Image (cartoon, rainbow, N blue to C red; front, side, top):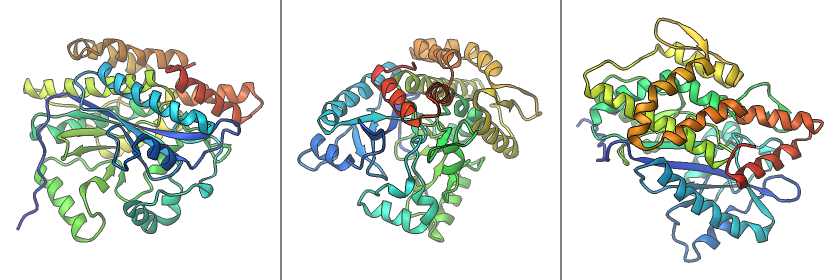
Length: 379
């Protein structure tokens, strides 16, 4: 009997955002293992809160939106969750913070959430799994026709380097400057089934892959496939998991708007019978490394012919291309905030600047990230 992977119905280009937040001590800036305390306060009856969830580590909570029609609506959902969490965290002398990695915390000091699926993950992945002291943003965009999912997924990979460069926020690891803009990107891909997706041509090819992985025990369910861009069949979406964690709401929404616009733009091309951009897997892999290493200074491969340009130059062209799509989706303001990131510098650049101004003190970097989260914008 052949394996079937149903794809749920979803309204076109609807949006959902997941944002992982670190819990840090107000005085020391180090991580605090108080996620369960906050979750108990959020839902005293023990049920799962619709917008605030547990994560792998006890120093982390994840906030999620409803299914939204606009980026602005998603932002309102996230703002309400931030406000609630800050109210509960303040008496504990805990602050909310986000970046791809914590600048100086030690992975060996972190505690894993007491849940079977997390214990299973750590038991299998051991040293690499224990090191996953990382934070990201996941953006879901609704796809109304399953036949569009794989072509759009492959097309999104041609802009993976752009999103990773813009969101790069993990230059430090365990108190050291890694010289990478996104250390998270290269760490996360060490997990089995994480990293770049296979570029399948037919849905049946994806089903065969999932069937094989289930058969040999690599996964127990599809959501254990942790690709940078993946179908989310139970939601009827494509889920972009490329971005490092963002320190503030403005950047989260800018990255969400860029993702939503790209998906809708590619969907429109398919409606018009036009081909979508594709790139050889080895070019996609090289772009991932270049953007992780050099961030906003990366020279990216732009197409299957091997043409190259500085990421900021191509982003300017891309933003102009997407303006009509953003107008149609009602996210012109949020998409334009990509230019704010380009002007003020990506988070990894701002973090390094703070460290330089403070003689290398990474506690000052944490304090800066906390301020950005409270301000809701890059500072």
